[in-house]
Length: 195
Length: 195
Image 1 (cartoon, chains in turn brown, orange):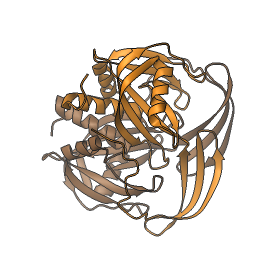
Image 2 (cartoon, rainbow over the protein chains, first blue to last red):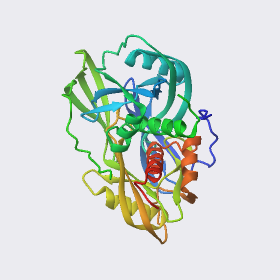
Image 3 (cartoon, rainbow over the protein chains, first blue to last red):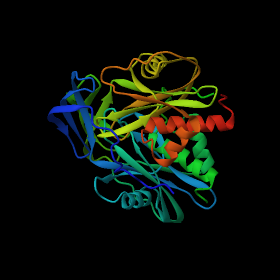
């Protein structure tokens, strides 16, 4: 079974040198550092890094009938609507599992007895340090959704295969959702995961 | 066959209102805007958006023997080494295919006769507007790699199934690489793609 291994040892020495670090911007979710660097070829340069205060957390809920749940919302950054797996953020150093459990409950009203670590990823490593994880949630029970006030969410229960088809057709474009759905599909096919 | 459809119509009205936009930081790759907003519930808030000047472009090269190529580099943002598909950036509004062709040649020395649009994605849509695409490259011919001077790259030719296993084991954590490899695997399995 897959285990998160965020702290894997570096298998190479850092070929960049950092000479100065400024912080031109921060808010409750991100901060920006601007750096004077020497690049791997020995030349001078700058690097702007977007640091995330939260770990991205995604959940693939699966019931015994082979259905999953998708959450739709208007994404301010993209100026477009996006269908995704339930997602949220866990403050750095806090339990990603506890955040996953809270987000699934808030967004869909679902509680789950069985939680399986599915994947870890870096969403955009040329500019950001954002790290994300996803879980598969099974043995589900159902209550009332309680979205946060910044969220205007729609929730759909769909056959898991329909979620896979939405990824393959390009109707789901959120990276964490795409990876989580495709890897869950691999696991269902190879028997790592059983409904 | 999958087609990019970036310009899909919004299927919902924007529930956010933007009252002011400042730009506290920019560099040649990103700019940050800080906004005073009203959120979907009607409450006041702020939003910091990271705007990307380039489209992320990834390439899955496949030869007739079923091998692909991975590129390893130390990622400054993560302070760790990362194995990925060949990737680069296309300035907004320019040809992503031309960038894919140039990046594959620069990083691996490979030219390809057949290019198939594989996917589009948004890497991190809660904070950034980053958009990415990937292509499958086939009918390959081989020359000399010419990496940019910010790059200290290692290149490996591996069986495509080994790349899939690296994703499933968590040894590849770059989101665009993960999605591109898993979707290519689906296409090879369902016959959309033939070696």
